[in-house]
Length: 215
Image (cartoon, rainbow, N blue to C red):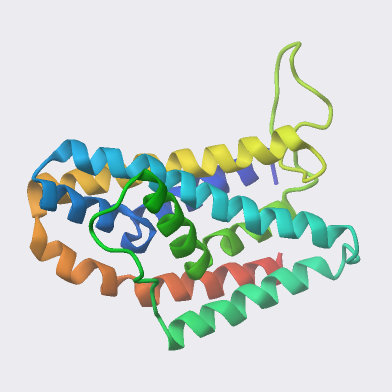
């Protein structure tokens, strides 16, 4: 494995999360249709990305706390087992938080996105990357680089950079999908997309857990 693989994986997972309607673009398009404005779609996506990043940060923060008291050899089995169990749970009971209405502000969107990403296990899906990529820091060139830079949870800069990269990829893909749906597809897509990907999402959680156990 090269030192770049964890970062590429995080970006790809961000793109995958951006494709999922449950991560926010579906709600952003609905708000845009309600206000009849493409700008409303884009305004909704930034706080949604912030909430997503907070959820991911919480999951990885808990992993960092667990590393202080759990033997390193056991940690991949725990994270993989949690992912598989959570994926099976989502496969059996694909429910979504529905407490928020359509009249929302930026703070509401951040909270909604945090709850949605947490309920879907978005942060959990990233944990195998942090566990396996810990010994493969990101490539760095120039005088500003540090020996400990990378995804390692012992490196605050690597921790923040990983969350930023993942969230940026998620935001870019979400914006692209939301604008295409808003301007080209419309409401008919909204009635189908949410449910079409629920089982795919649950399967992806299970697959991530299995890969975390095998690698």
